[in-house]
Length: 117
Image (tube, rainbow, N blue to C red; front, side, top):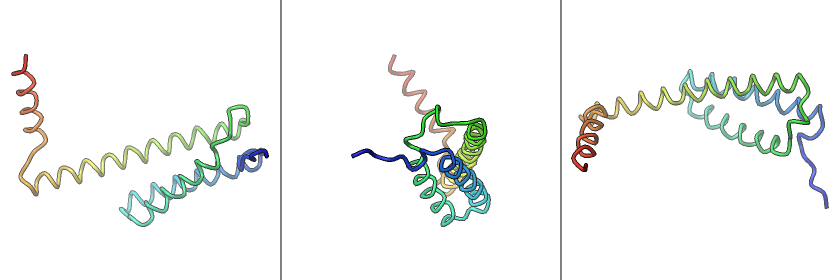
């Protein structure tokens, strides 16, 4: 029995990549609005679309698909950076609430490492 690739044909691959671009844009908007439900939905949709793209190879990509892949890579990177900024801000606020500071903890760790020599 042969396994078929959902994104195997050119038109299916185009459609899957188009959907990925739409989901990445939705994720960006969800991140900007701190909309947790939309962020989770975007994550699930991206995971589903990655599964659909799993069997695709570079040989399956025409010029339009290559352009969509490059755009998707850029959007994903921007979204990753936004998620990291949000996570850093949350960590900073939690540190303020608990009275700890990452800066001072890093210095303590360096002092401990220097003492081991």
